[in-house]
Length: 464
Image 1 (tube, helix red, strand yellow):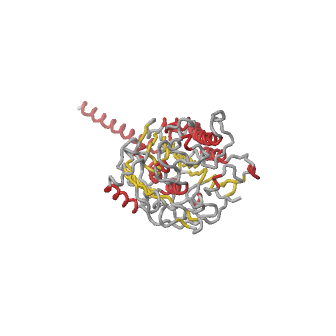
Image 2 (spheres, rainbow, N blue to C red):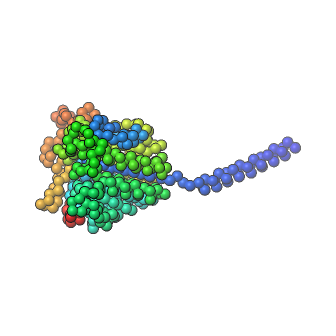
């Protein structure tokens, strides 16, 4: 009986201890702060070629910070921009829609987003993120419904109008919707380099917003023309033309900005909880004054900015997301800017809209496989200044599905077919050899668009 009584007392004591332990665990769990959602940084460079970084094979231009970012993260070898020119590409990035559905489909000056258009910044802002855009917007000029403040950004500093961004020594920039004068550039002087000012403001945003999750959209204008820079360091002594030195220095300056962001995140102890994306808004620009051929900016890829061959739409894409991406990894999985919105939504833990073209590629970032990507579509439209509209039919179209890609390079031209797995440089048109594949992809391409909105240039606030 004594043994039974002791056993009973032990059971009661054990029960009390277990209850206390459970209570203590639940109390500590309730008191522990929830894990903060990751910060998100998206660095978007302008007209930079897919092979302008050392990590992508560049031999002459120095990009040590971006090369280090690639070693620390995941490099994609077959990522695509949203379009082959500025505004359509950025419209796709912000909307999650490809060129056949996106609100802006041509470089039509001040064609603005409409108030009903939801953007990536809207999504992240609603999820509790502080949102800042710095650099080139291009989706709505001052006084329109397309300004960043009406589409999810807490603050913006830079250029609203894409043509305004063609000068690195403008009379003013936009601070939200207020003109920010640059007196050092008055009368044609060149004392305030806009790219440096925009970069510094992006760092200030991170410092001010470090206490909550933030989305930094660093849409730096480098190395877009007009090709100008205060100094061509570190290329002064190279036996190159002045234009080549200038272009290389602009790319290296963008690399320096990237290094500055990385250093600041480390200083603020935010780097381990920040997902960083780095890309370009389209393929490299084949300009006689920027050394495109000298530097082999698009590598062996066919075409350049303005084309829908690989050279016009293939973009560098590096992602470093500590704890998710594997350092030094390389992926050949194809994806494009329409996928950025749902991917960042997944990272932020926010629901993505249902009616978009993009899909989340978070599994790729995690090193997992995912189903074959849905067909990816692009089109190129010219804005007819005399008629004040874009043409009803696109000037060029392209669609990739799996290993195959179809291209209609001009209106009413025959559709070309390429096997990108065996022919990534699009040298051999297989239209005659693969009629079944051609018919299938041509039909997909034809059905991938709706009529575009009217594109009205309207007032240009940047004019001096």
